[in-house]
Image (cartoon, rainbow, N blue to C red; front, side):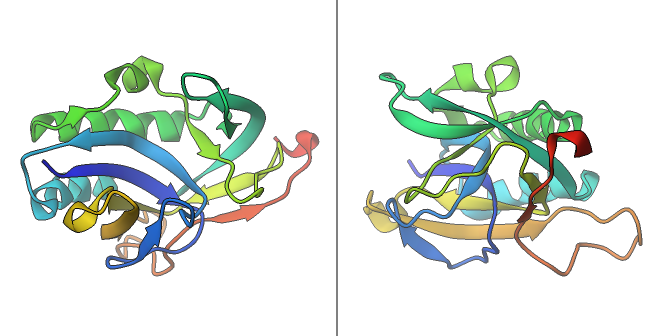
Length: 182
């Protein structure tokens, strides 16, 4: 069965973008990896519903931690954020509605720990503000190649400020703030 993940990338992504595990761009996992008997279009329909109800929002990078069984995967945690929690919860509801099976269900719902994995010695400094503007559905093994990742669908979050539809700019962005700005 196909295996997917839903992310908010810190750099613009579009359907068709591909990269290896080592080249994986910095991103915030919004729905952890799952398998499904459904195709990407079925999943995209569920994800479009979620995107329609959530405008872009900002999150703030927190401290460092280690993930994985040995806690040897360095990550930057994301400070608690109501908009991110609401987005994650609606994703869980919509994905459950199409019958996905999460690899690690303990990391969903109350067990969700939003983070950005450190990549290529690149990490987010504590206090960095990350703009969450779109979601991407990533195939974790396109055409059976477990070394490659491919974006199969990407969509902007809704813009409620203008009512004009999705934000024209894809991706996210980062800016530095000081603790006094939080």
